[in-house]
Length: 381
Image 1 (cartoon, one colour):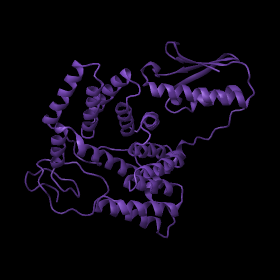
Image 2 (cartoon, rainbow, N blue to C red; image 1 turned 120 degrees about the vertical axis):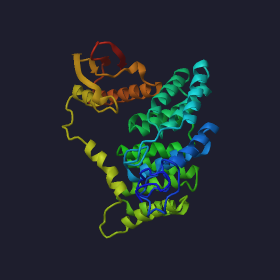
Image 3 (tube, helix red, strand yellow; image 1 turned 120 degrees about the horizontal axis):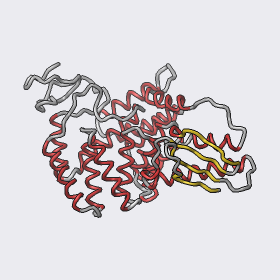
Image 4 (spheres, rainbow, N blue to C red; image 1 turned 60 degrees about the vertical axis):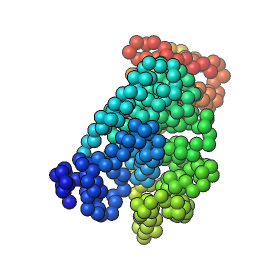
């Protein structure tokens, strides 16, 4: 079926409902593995959104994370080729109302957290709302750098935008405050999986199921992580648990497909794991190891998450002082937890370099803006 028999709107392959009028379509063929958004679904979302967001948006978000981890591909809001969907006026008006209330109460963290939440859920349908969500959570973190909803929200935004190192920093800080949140453990694990660290991911997945037995998403992603490590036996065991706790027939079919692929005679891991391994391989740039203290310090700053690509140059005015010039790296605008991790990584790396090359005298590392020369941070060790 190419067009809706009710309104004539073009329909997507395997669609269950028309995106134009919500009319149920003929029974589809087997699902392709991506959750679908349509007019009927969006209508329900709007009702839930206006009522308080509750269950549906949470389920959407969790399902998206299950799917993207399984495929080991960057998260997307809509399936490829899906027609653009405009958030209904009722939902837009509701969000505008929350925004107006927040602007009247600049010190009310709960209201600003709510604005961030509703904007983030809306961004699943209209990505332009990511900006509002980011601004809301940034406002909260200025008031309270340890606000759990804002930290989790920032992590979710970075997750969706494929800014994995930033998401890791946000989720790690959140889990220091909420150490038993199994869902965020799984999200953090998936970020580690995307950045080529399956061992760290597996540790979090196992911890998540110890806190929340029968957690389908954790077992599903655990199977992907083991498969990426070519540990087929443990991958099968994890997928078997995922099959046991799968919430619906589509999930069971997908797990069955992955198990079948593991059991095939080709000896290859599931596509999900193979695809996931690619970023790690491409990220491993071959370069000669440093042979001097100065070389190790420069290697340190150029390989830092997020900051590394922004390094313009590293200069040494003296043996005891390095000047790192950064392009478009406004440290003042960093969320506190990101800046803290940045400084901690530099400090730990500088200590290792000093130990390796037996440097006992004090060393200073100035982080400065390349355009203006302004020193934004000084690390002294």
